[in-house]
Amino acid sequence: MKTLRMIGLALFAALALSASVGAGSALASDTTLCKTNTNSPICLSKNQYPASTSLFAKSPEGKKFTIVTDFVNMECTSTMEGKTGAQTGNPLSVSISKWSFINCGTCLSPSLTELPSGSLRWGEGADGTLELKAGSSQPQLKVKCAPLIDCTFSLPNPTFKGGSPAQLVFPESSLSMSGENCPKSAHVKASLTVSSPEPAYVATTIPEEAHTRLCKKAESPCSEANTYPYGTMLESEASKIEILTTAFNISCSTTKLSGKTTALGAEPLPFGSIGFSSEKCGSPSVGPCTVGLTGSPTIQLAFINSTEAFMPFLLDLQLVCKPSVTIECTYRMSGPNLVVFHGGEPATFAFNGVLLELVSTNGWCPTSPGEFYGSFSVKSPKPLYAT
Image (cartoon, rainbow, N blue to C red; front, side, top):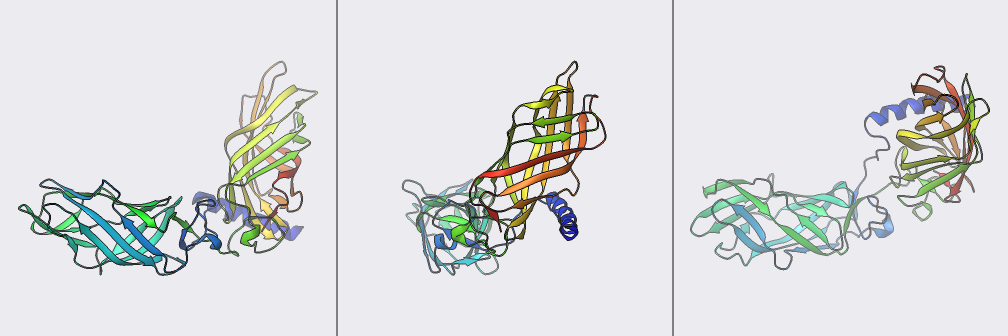
């Protein structure tokens, strides 16, 4: 038990540091093209497109790849073809075999000075950036539009917006240019529809050994087949909770605590959409009370072994009682009193004297720390392990 507590103290300090740079941030991982966005931004291996997957993107019907200038606009139908160099990569390599511009009106067959190489890097959600390089520079498009423009434009990297179909969307930022007769200003207004592969979502991979995740079995690492998906709602219930202070003690009957995973796996695993409700709260000395959450509550899980995980909370409990005067107190669960999550069917976790620090009061609350007690049983999902 002493060893477990020492580990808990060290972990609490580490988690406090990680919170300053983004709690629950995922470890570096590869980019992949995914067949589904079910677990976005994570893609399980069974849903990843394989190496040498063909990429085909073209200007959508009725829309042109347009370079807007202060002289004349270049408007063409554009087609890009290529294939992925691997199933996953950091970034994912993409070879470009063709990028053409046709049906350009008065602009004579614009062409690239060199076909670029490509690499796809996940950004957020189901989107990423297709980074294009021709040698050491961005792709160079040579354009002649009689009689005003003879110029080479440096094309920007498009955003790969996942979907069915996906889209390559070029930013409308100012273009760098060079040549004998260039406009004063120019920008791209264009998108290409990705018809192969379809659907396509940019995603990250997750090494089985790298992250804490919710698992259907007591196994470490948790296999993909037994991993609960992104957005799993954890719903737990306690038959009784107690808030003990030096001035009064409050108890509640049925209390529910819930949270939804905001990653498939992370270290620590974060939960959002925290819910808390309690019934029949009060005490003989102060009468009926209400107990709820305020502020920005968080729940995390950090793996210990195949059946246990530390479960640090950042919860502000708001207590309101109305005897002859209104008592309003806000207590924060603080210090290295980490709750231990025990996997099983059902999983359980308990607050056994977790320290409550007073953070606000209307003047009727004791300033010395209180304690919180409550044993929770996970109602959903079942079975549940943190591995």
